[in-house]
Image (tube, rainbow, N blue to C red):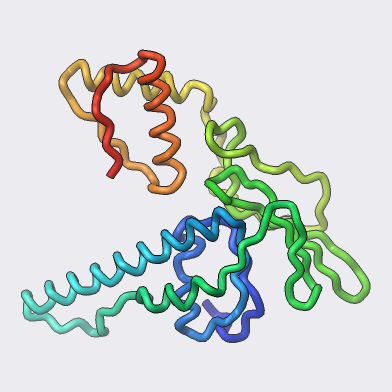
Length: 235
């Protein structure tokens, strides 16, 4: 990251997926000392996600060192985690949890930021930023990751009707999603066909939001008798 960590006045985070918050402790270890502003649910998830990430990195580094020793290899660079659990402990007090839809003044009032529902995961947000400079006010919309409408456990994304600038993600910008309404039919079909032939259904899924959504749909299939009563494990 080309921006020096110690030069940052604030950071605003849209949601708690690790590809968005995962380097915060690293930046703190490099000198970051500024408010980390996010929604309240994002703050709660960040506590869990960052601690888990640091633990996994530490364990991975130990295993890699053992493998190098066993193989008699000396790596060109020292094997160390990106950050430690101590770095996480230094990061968490910098988090400032904010409500949706209420302006948060940053950088001496140069920016007013409102968190708006993004419909992506619990606590996810789009940023509505009012920039006050040279007597003018311009509105910037920063989308973060945008979810879909009509999801069962997440609120729909916010719609905006005005902006001077829009900065947005485009992960699925070149395709249309399938109709979400038939996902339970598809899931029921896969589960029932697999069970009928004596198999096990293994579903790879993101730990945050997707897993909870799957459990929700499996629970509904059980509740309405659309699949056999079988054990469901979330690892």
